[in-house]
Structure formats: C-alpha cells, structure tokens
Amino acid sequence: MSRPDIEVYHVAELDHRKLLGQFLHEQRNESWHQIRRLVEARRVQLNGNLIEDDQKRINKGDVVRVVPHSQARPPKESDCRLQYLDEFCAVIEKPAGMTSIREHSDNAGQKHDKLPTVDEVLPKLMLNGLDKHFDRRVKLPKVFAAHRLDRDTSGLMVFGLTQVAQQHLVAQFRRHSTRRRYTALVHGDCPPQTIESYLAEDRGDGLRGSVTDREKGERAVTHVRLIERIKDFTLIDCRLETGRTHQIRIHLSEAGHMLCGEKLYHRPLGQPVTLDDSGAPRLFLHARSLGFAHPVTGEEMDFEMPLPDDLQEFLDRLKGIRKSKSRDRRST
Image (cartoon, rainbow, N blue to C red; front, side, top):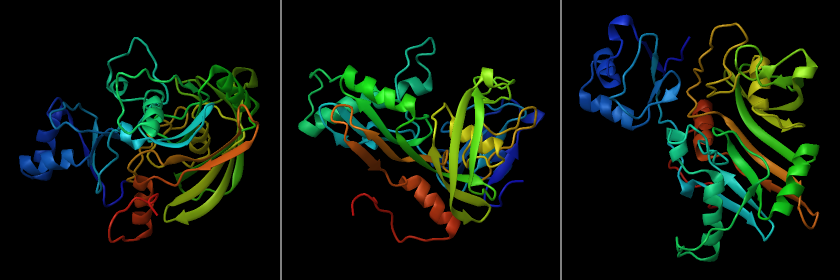
C-alpha cells in the first residue's frame, strides 16, 4: 500500500516502450510542460530510482512514482567537506550518492563512473585549504583509503596520507577497535536489540545476506538503540561492532525493519519485493560519528557530523515541523 501523498502508476502492456513523459502526460492529464517540470524537479521515480529524463522508455511491469518532494540530486565536489587534516591523515564528510574510491573496471563509462569519487575530491580539498586559488597544474597529493562507505550512505571517512598511516588505520578497522555510529530511519516499530549473524556474498539468490553455515559467512554484529518513534517509522542509532559490507542494511532488513529509501535489500529470501513507500529522498543511513587512534601519535580522536539537510528536512516533514526558511546548520 502506498502513502496518500505518493502517486503510483503501474505500466501495463499497452504502455510498453512508451516515453516516460508521454505516459505521465496520459496518466495525470497534465500538459507536457507540467510533466517536464515534474521530472526536472526530481520528483519522479522509476522502479525506485530517480529519473531526470522524460524521454526514457518504460517497460511493462515498471512502477512509476511521483513523490511530493524533490529527491536527492547527484553529488558535486563542493558537497564534500574536509573536517580534519594533518600530515598523516584526513577526515572528510562524504555526501550520499558519491562512491568512496574509484574502481577501474570493465564497466568504466557508466553513469556512476562519471561522477567524482571521494578519493579524487579529497586531494583537491587539501590543496584548496592551503591555497584558495587552486592551480589544476599542481600535482595532487596521494591519499589512501582506510575503509569505505556505501555510495548511498553519507557520513565520515578517514584517509591515510602515507601508506604507513593507512596501514595503521586499516589495522584498527580489522581489529574492530574503531568507533562508528550511524543514524538510520527504518520501517515499523524497531526495538533496541543486538543483531548477530554470519554474512555471505550470496545468500542463495545473488544478494548478500545472512547464512546459517558459519563457514560460508563472516561474523557481523550490529547494536541498535532507539532514538525516537515517528509515526510508522523508528529513528535509531546503530553501533558497529564489526564492519561488513552493507551490514546495517542487511541486518535491519532481515529483522523486518527495512531502511527508508532502501532499493536493494527489500525482500526476504524467496519472497516478493517490498518497495519502499516512505517518501525518503534517499537511503536514510548516515555515518554520524567516527573514532580512531591517530596512526602516528596514537591519540584517540573522535569526530561528529550532523544529519545532512535532506534527511533532516525529511524528518521535520514527518514530524509536521515547519521551518520559515532553510539554512546551513553548520553555519551557526
């Protein structure tokens, strides 16, 4: 069942291969100009994905959604912020939609490969911090990732600026001695709990997930704490004891509390897909705090990043909070 403020259209056989704009024009009985503005405002989804081209072809069985508020736009370099920098390590605030590290593969040239990655943006931020008039002819410093965040997750990342510093940081992540907390909004009434399972690359249908055979998976532990219940959702704090790929998303989905904005882990093994109907602008998962020992001095360091504006504004709408005007919460 969809929420009343989200309009859902199912593509029938007679609409197969139509242009998205034409389909919406017929379904909504609105002018082409109105449909084009709707798409440009980032309010149209196709099978849960943001669509910015009204000329895209649709297929039988597709699901088109029109949401009441603009969805997250593709990230830009300026969306990254440098929170800490010395000669050995750097802490950066990663926006949602940006990949942590450039992967050079046979899929180069796809849409996501054209967007900047965090490891490409960080060196420019480092130089810009020293010289506001950045000269692109200057050789960029090298950075070495100590860990990753999912592309659709926002939050804090640390990079080593030497290979030795990176090795020290990576060792901490492997020992699970780093301190990481995430803020998430999930479907349903999610109680405080500790979720432990063994995660495998393939749970049986090509997706990562928990398996009963411990020999085939890696131990994963997520500690969940209640922050606030909001209508049909629960705002929670997740502390990682381990840090497996997609760990929080998988654990919460398997516990029956799928993340708002989830587009991958949205069905139990062998069960139909449960499409997200929360209206979230993107995956509601934010790595809000990060703690580690400095790779050279050993000093314990802790960093915090507030909830990004898009997620905070979505929360405010759920709570019925109205703001007179938007502002940058970091500017005060």
